Length: 535
Image (cartoon, rainbow, N blue to C red; front, top):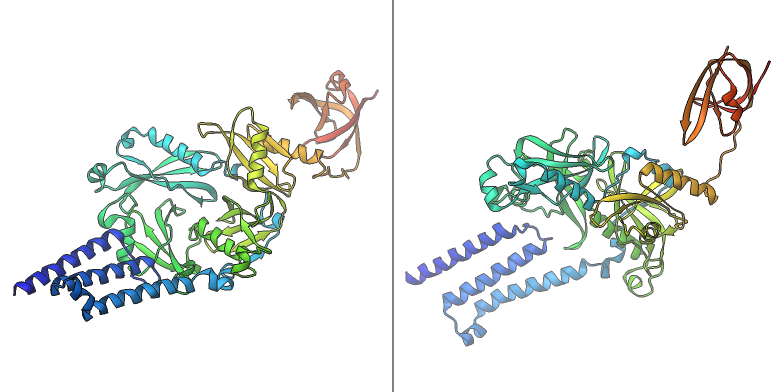
């Protein structure tokens, strides 16, 4: 009876230890997960330990014990299966399958990427957004002692605006103990174009977050509801009504036991109530923006670009091997968020052969064959324009400026604040424009394109027209530092713009004077070519 009791105690203790390990590590119960193989290995070794303890085996008896050999044999077989499975799942023996994980279409730059108005261009990178978020949080005296801003800052499209959102989190375990019954009361929302920062307060607090503990921790909450799912990186988003959700992509293994990871499903978890919805990836709601992480998409494209002629070629000859550049950014197109990154030769030369856009919701990927400077070269060019100010360039955003692929770069000071903006032509990166505002930068960039022959002035085909009559009204204005007179003539509803720089005699005319004006029609005012007084 004593032996039975001791054995029972050992078994119960082992089960408790395994339960604690499972509760803390949360391994998915899925053969494709490396964690579950480790978990199984620990279980087998615990069984071996219990067996040795139960049989009171000495060193010699351990070597000769058939039962122990069976247990350790099972362990060795498991290790062998894991190692062989890892090899057979790798690109070494599955280069073609890895290369075909991603379908890449060839896109047309000016057709796919429309020109954005200045109020839709994301001006901030993640670090700048974090500075604004922390500053906003610091102004909330009633909350700052209890909560801090999480460092997630997911970029999403919210009501057709590019924004970053991040939940608050408990400042410490003590703050969790005193506040967890109400939950986390707000999240930060930052408009990436206008830099407007808002602390969005909720009617009900979020009770399922990364900073919660025990069963309300979002990872544990998901694991107990979906014990077999292997989740990729979670992201925090809000729907069009502002309700906070966790977007939880589920990995799909397409090659062997452990290889060819894509996303097969996505779970949506309401951060307030903990309610979940499970979708196949193709059925996921359109409002979500991030099912595929940027890092996963970049990895898939690198497989596509480097494994065209097999694994050995990607390591040795490297013929026709292309890879993404270091870094990426985000672009909002048709209410989806696309990852942008350049594509260059794997040999690492200083130019891009093109760039790719990859949809974070659908995995749709488009390649654009636009040769030009790498992002690093463009950043160096932008910093060179303001080298006396020692500003640092952020990773570029790719824009369509007058049909030209253009790197748009924010320039930050030592404090991390955006001070200026730069535009660098992708194909001719020596063409660099800077400005204190986006509008000023774009104006200078357009002028440089005209000066360098990239853009030509369109031929003016408007017909010259003439009007004669007395002046019925005169108004004066200053446009870009130059004086202009605006005339109205009897019998005509048109407005005529007369530049004093071009026609100094315009100051001689008064209401009632009869004049003859030659002009070309414009949208708001007509462009005057000549103005003469008549008797």
